[in-house]
Length: 307
Length: 242
Image 1 (cartoon, rainbow over the protein chains, first blue to last red):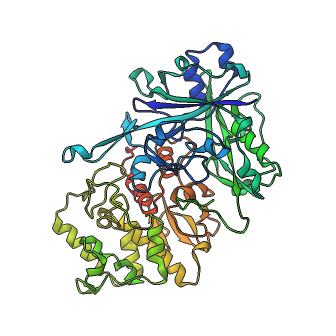
Image 2: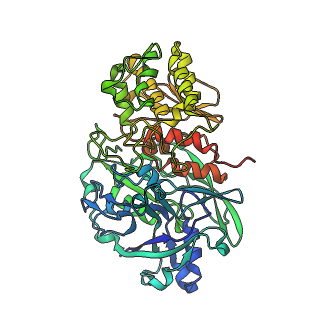
Image 3: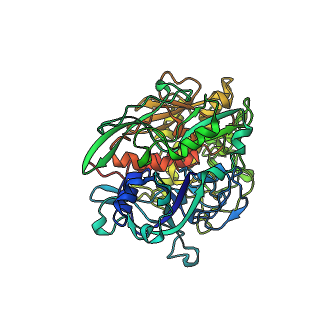
């Protein structure tokens, strides 16, 4: 049995740190202040994706449907594999076209001592002239945990509450409170959409590490079930900080989509959730398997999205 | 091609397309664009069908800035008369290639949205997208042949360059010439984030530079093309000088 624990935190203060996500390393570090060492050593954390606490419509591939208020600020029921990715992609295609989705889904950027700072809320409307039109939308951080020792999970609310991410924590930056958490058994999920398709794509949700300066980390070639070779991929340098030491990583940058050449899409999909490659316990190497329902045509969903 | 750069002249003055005059300041204006390029460019930045305003407190032709949240104003504090003059100058250019370059450099076109109900869109980048699609369609290519291509700064390809910044340019074209590129897909939709995320290389310093990473992070969150290109232009002004 493989269980993951989804966690949704609400940012209470602005955040200074990695702008793409709160790294799994930062999440483990933040949780470490309230956990026993044995629990901490067993823990594996995903990267935390920033989610706007806004209305939304469940995407077509989700097992739920319809418009939900605050779809971004709750963890909905999980029945199928695709449900796990509702909050994991930064373009958040569940946001409604009838709302100012670009304004809601881009971080407000402030400057602190020359560094960019991400705002913890977005205030819409012009409060002076239209007091009633004012609306505040808060940012959330979505992550999930799993553990080498399955009895470690679920972590209790006391361990997950009142946490801080990123830099300048002494000044209150990065304060977050627990909003929602949910345990999911990966073995009981519905994988039928993957099973029904003859062809699949791989979408990298977080960077895949191909080389690491960290002692003992193995250099990993791009998996053979990715259709693309190195020349077609975009690379980006990342870093992990362990015991105040910085180690450089070479990664295949997240967000890229490759054709899947393997013949075991469900097993691959499962591996993508628990992540592959070096530093996977710190959030790297997460990916989604996307079924291509008709090989000759690209698919589109109700929001006009194509894969 | 010159008509393409004047097809939305009425939006500078808040007139509906149906009642817009066929001439503006002595030149033809508000003519429809061939090959369906206008509709396809609109689909890159706005959903189809009828929509109420996404920001009911801002029902004007002036753009809302995604960077500041505020309505746009002329950076040099120019008056309405200055705006009118700049609009007239922009629309009066008669050479198509010169008109393209004027639109790429234009400040006044950034003040306006491409649709009142979607105030974060940009009339400047909508018009440049229409031009790029139109010229590619005119040459016999279909949408699915097209790519977003990253060019070096200062390299302007007539009608096809849709963004010309001080660090790099972006172009919509069939051939990428071994430059970083991504295919646009089978049909136009609000695909900016999806296409940007698939570029074979990003023209930003995304390894360590926190400002570029922040810009990249937000570009991965924007669907509408004209909004994203305008955000790229505006973000350059946010970054503190080294």
